[in-house]
Length: 213
Image 1 (cartoon, helix red, strand yellow):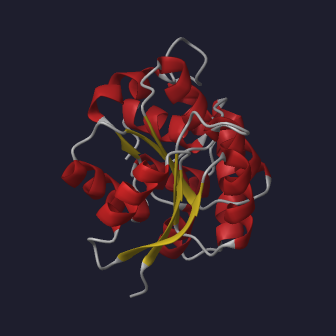
Image 2: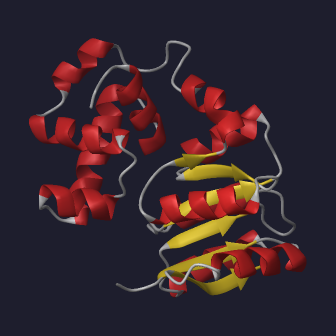
């Protein structure tokens, strides 16, 4: 089994070194590259062979949120987790809606952080425990689709919604349902439109909240 290739994006060299040392304690993971700002991250994401990107939020030249948006706009669907000090509700919501696959805080214990990184690499949605309430509230407030919107989904879209609720990546979904990743992307786009949601994370939370499993 090949190693999980990770890109670290942070403007503090000492923090990058610390994450590198932590990650490389696990023989199944390796650091494929480093970037010190969002612009470098966008370039690296488009050129390196990566399985996971760990990215800070607040950086000079280009912040992590803008880098995330550009990476997704460029069609790169590598799993990406924000690793930052900010626990502000707006930052968490903006990152997850822009396509982040998780949001972790830098003050986590090293062993907990390593465990969450491994889970992210396996295709799971990861979020620091103290931010769970924010995640649960993302689809609250009446903007999300009503339960009867489920009836508008095709059987295949419903299958994919169930896999999203389990935090599975496109690659994992494609393998599980024996379809291509491109087909998965089309179905995800369609079901988000039908449910009035903006990201796969919102869809996952909505599905769990409405008993779709």
